[in-house]
Amino acid sequence: MEVVTKTKNIQHPMEDVLDLDPGTTLVEYNEVIPSVPVAMPDYDVKDDEIETKLEEIYTVAMGNVEAVADELDRVEGKYKARIGEVTAAMLNVALGAVREKRELKKHKDGIAPTSGDGNPRTVNNNLIVADRNEILRFLQKKGEGK
Image 1 (cartoon, one colour):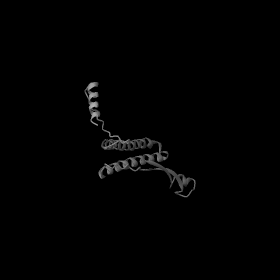
Image 2 (spheres, rainbow, N blue to C red; image 1 turned 30 degrees about the horizontal axis):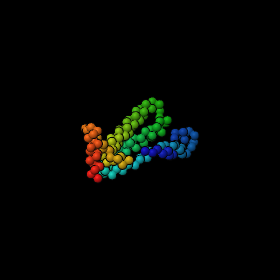
Image 3 (cartoon, rainbow, N blue to C red; image 1 turned 120 degrees about the vertical axis):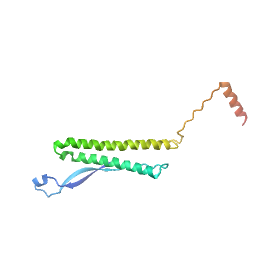
Image 4 (tube, rainbow, N blue to C red; image 1 turned 120 degrees about the horizontal axis):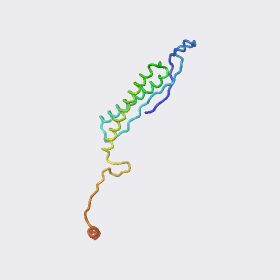
């Protein structure tokens, strides 16, 4: 997710008081641009669709939070608490999307065949019950076979 600050013209009530042309007040606002999901070769189309939708939900929720934060200064005092509740609800939606993406990532990591260093994720710990002499005899026989 990337946040870009842009400007737009709005009609402000002070334009009438100050005798300015209507719709000439410039206001900065933040626009949320969604990030591109990472492509996973072991995934099918449905998994990619789910991840894209989760990213879209997160982006819309965070965009709404940014929009509410931009408008908070222009809201009458008695409505600020309600706007805070709406903002908290949007943040909960974004958090839910992040949790779902975390579970999706955990699933992706579970099906990935190797880690980044090329070593397999499965570790086989084979237990050998023998004393030192048996292991030396085995290694000696193995060395004679070559």
